[in-house]
Length: 106
Image (cartoon, rainbow, N blue to C red; front, side):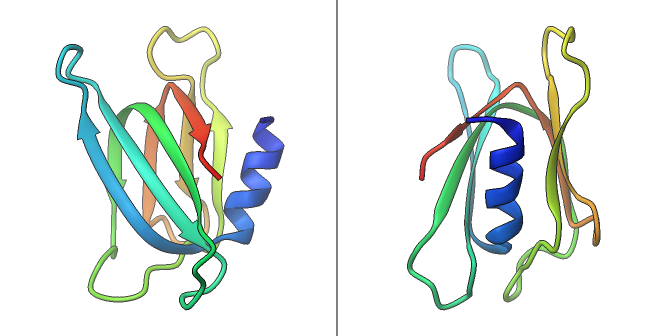
């Protein structure tokens, strides 16, 4: 899936439903599952699994409904051997992290 398409889906689904971070036991690299929806009452969710996550920054997440007004994935360095992308909440700066790859889980 192209980056423009992923960014469109992320913008349309701005309500945080689930955030889960795990670690790969052999490489000790962190991965992050992010599930979003377009409405706080919606059962339809889209999920993304981000690989080799680093530089995680979160602000004002938790304690109730969390919305991201404009999450956007950008290329940071295509020649970087570790992380090639960054995702940021451009409007409210609630979330940002770097990652190497992403899978759209639907």
